[in-house]
Length: 157
Ligand SMILES: [Zn+2]
Image (tube, rainbow, N blue to C red):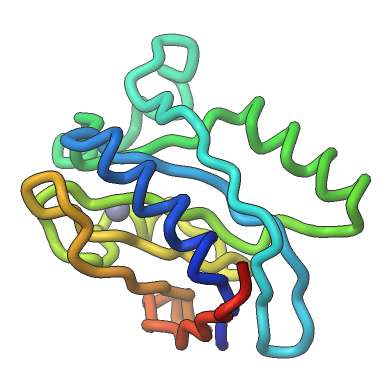
């Protein structure tokens, strides 16, 4: 799989990750899928609602290591609903979800894997001491193991 994303779109994610640090930022990627190529059209940063009491039921069965916002993100279900609707209007679909890893590598955690769906891409940015140092994207393979995916960076505005 390859994900095509522009320099400007990566910058939106980088800015957001540095702004939200030391918490994890997160967001939705809208785009198109053609064979094994996903093309990002819109980056939608969302609020990290991890720890929101209204979502306690959904989050209750997660392990201790997943429990703080610095090691876990939850995209607001309302934001996903809105993005899905916007995607329908623009003939786009949700192609992935990005988030940041404050002071840790751009590698999926156990929690990331537990909550991932195989149709989506999961770009992760590593933010070390407030500065983004790495950007990698991940997809689940047929054994539900995360594999790094190729990033094709479009030099478009
Ligand atoms: Zn993560």
